[in-house]
Image (cartoon, rainbow, N blue to C red; front, side, top):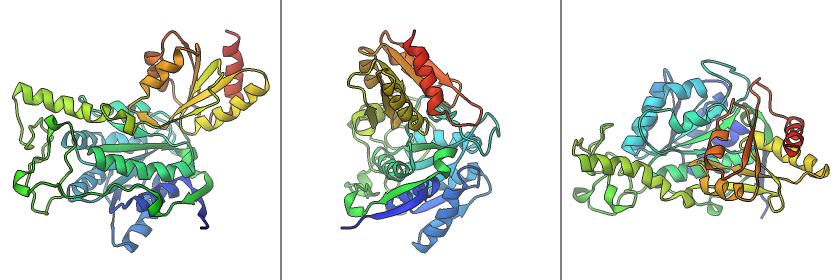
Length: 378
């Protein structure tokens, strides 16, 4: 069977992935460098009988997405750093109320309005800790256009399966570059759809913390009546101040993600078999790192790469195990040092070095190779 191959921009691939995943609803507000996601879905979704809304601002956009998701829609929004900052209250609400949705962040430089048309990787910690309170989050960092399509589909699957907001972090480079994309047919993919709970409506509890299993979210309007609140609540959804209920509710928001980490995590290992220096790189920077590794190998320096694709939850176990045998680790990233903090926290006896460039330009293979040479002499 001949494959459906297209030349696509990264933002276009995200929109295509959303459609393949069965996206029913988009609400957003234009912001560089993510606006093409909204533009493309504004054309595609209405033709499929689905809903596209341009809202008055970023806050309203995610509010509309959460309302649609409560009604049973697979819902998505797309933005960049300043818009994600505005969405944080609703991200916390989605986490507490366990509302599945996908949030695209095509990263650019900051803080504030920063560098609207230039790339950065400065929102990694924002994705993890941007909203207040203890919670877990799933965040994904594809490194190219083809991967952006497939990881958008996976983001929808994880959102539905674990009833949680899932963030997909690309950047201006990936969002606007063009590469070959292999469009999958739906029978090649796992698509997790929204389904009605397998219990009668009168016995449905939307938040079954003590079962160890994520209760499917019953779409409102289908006969399942339940309470939704951002307050700490019990299994029926109504607020509670009982200390055991509070502890169970807080534990559940963490446990449902971290106790399923093997299902959620995804990563790539590159030339690690004999590596003496480890590069931990993600997103577009990993592309430069891959080329720098080939340059280093040609110069006789044994370097390999670990690339987190799921960046949150962070791959702690993998970093720990690698750091036990590779004692020099280099973390290049387009920020002033974010993922390096997690690498340092989880490494065992390894010396961790950073390469941090935030001038709006991509980190080049030459820059990484130069740093590799410096590290190899230490």
